Length: 331
Ligand SMILES: [Zn+2]
Ligand SMILES: [Zn+2]
Image 1: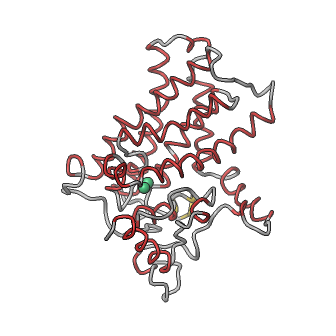
Image 2: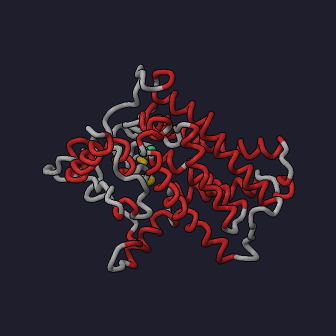
């Protein structure tokens, strides 16, 4: 089942492959294509997407559960526990439900599934010899802890005047602009951290754990080695430089953590009750998990295009990526 023409040799390697070249943010296209840019941003800021989902979680979390900044001026177990639960509960619920729907209940069968295979079981590559348990373990122990500790640090710094704070009423334009700025910042930060993680010594030490998952699932999203989590979540340090609000810090956390649940889901679209409900998977990153030395960034910024590591989903892309991998590892 594929949209691609039969002549596409790459399509034969996938159960489902989205049609055509992997789509990138047209913002960086020359000559400019303003309508395409508008459509690109509307598709995930004005529709059900991981971005709007992260925003909704952040707004709910902020209004209903996050303690006021004054309370966070001292490190005390009460609010710190609340912040941890604000991360743990939505993350476990999202990854858990998506996993149940897609892989346990097989709610949409193989529809829009990139890789025909099931998650690995009885495989010594994984902790507990089981891919899903391995991914859950690294997510809940290391992932959610590093995410939470970085937020503790930022909230505490904001409350004590070490990190600049703005409000919606005092600075509405900057307040709203911070959301897209944070998305671009994350893409920039992720590309460079991820490039560093593919340096062979660091890859072997840390990143190989995430790459156990050639065939990814929702729990693979932030299943990483603690060293990778430490690097990955340093992007919270932006809040020490740019003026922001606790709502942005929550949004930043959900984007960084829950977005990968969807982008690693292994399915291109969510299909419920006989209709497509949301664009979900990320074929760009799925290619990275299968071929390794390509698509280190995200579709938001063309770093991979500029630095020659872009895999557009074609047979040619696979050939160049394999050659690059041989050069890097000398085989
Ligand atoms: Zn990944
Ligand atoms: Zn990687």
